[in-house]
Amino acid sequence: MLDLRQIDTSNNPRRVSVGLMIATALMWSLGGVLIKSVEWNPMAISGARSGIAAIVLLAAVRRPKFTWSFPQVGGAIAYVGTVSLFAIANKLTTAANSILLQYTSPIWIALLGAVFLGERATWADWLAITTVLAGMALFFADDLTQASLLGTIIAIASGFCFGCLTLFLRKQKDGSPVETAILGNILTALISIPFMLGSPPGSRGWLLLAVAGIFQLGLPYLLYTTAIKHITALDAILLATIEPILNPVWVLLAIGERPGPWALVGGTIVLLSVTVRSVVTAIGSDSVSACSAVAPISRDSASAHGTVPSVGNDYVSIRSAVAPIGSDSESVPGSLALTHDNNEPDRPDCPGS
Image 1 (spheres, rainbow, N blue to C red):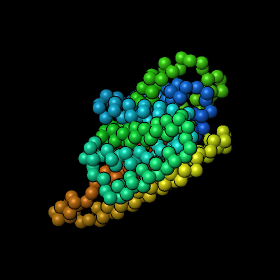
Image 2: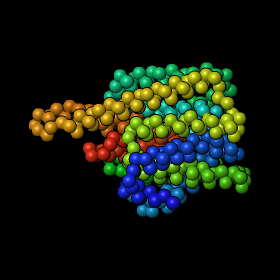
Image 3: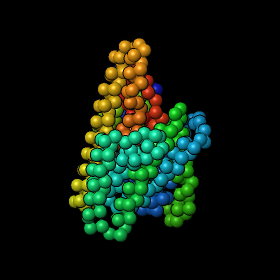
Image 4: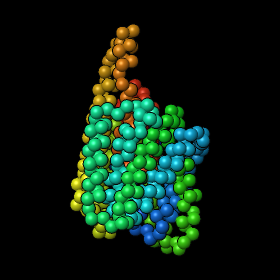
């Protein structure tokens, strides 16, 4: 059995961490097929899944530190919106629409970052925002029923909440993403209790919910927060694309659900825009770090270093592209507390979906 605490002292922690990230993305990608396979109210599904995930996380953390700060509580509320809306969207529209539109979270971060964190969007951000909005518009070009139209709108709202979750986690300078995820899961479970009072899903449904809570939310989050410490931002971005690609594939194979042709085109545009933008950001961050590392320590170099953009400011978009996208990542994924050590390789901020 793999002991996550021993990865730091292993001979090749990066190789092990890449394997953990692949496993994480694979487990996250099961969200769509698991939600669609349970015959129950989507809010009840979300609450049961989160309740089980909270137990897994509490068992692993044992002594969580709740500060009840505005960012921690705000992040937990955003987490509730992310996972609940994702579950509802999956019941109303296709799994492809749900996950690909949630993958737009970095765009919301770029738009809200200036207000929330005082960070200005770059020309690359605005280019990505424009192309993503164009891709999102194509989702509405298919012949949608009233329910699928509502599901598509809710999926966009889920991506917005995921972006807010990332921003709240960025706001926690010394906070831990685990506590935010635990609190978010607990709140989701409590809010969903009234929706669980109807007819239960049956033994098969509870088995699928247990799989979702343990293997699609709880365990992936633990693997992610361990692996993210030892891989580069570029590694994380590329590995994260496994989830939005495989999520609709599992649904197609298990249920036979096919996304509309325009949704496929729009989803491809969204996926490529977000991934390319994040890759460019990661490469730029690596260049800045390399320059900072070789700069001589003197009054002049210190002054020059002050003009170098903060690498940490770019992590928010990188992490959102990753998680997520666990999407619903409760993984939340979105979002981990940001730390930066000049002796370590650049990496996305660690979350929690």
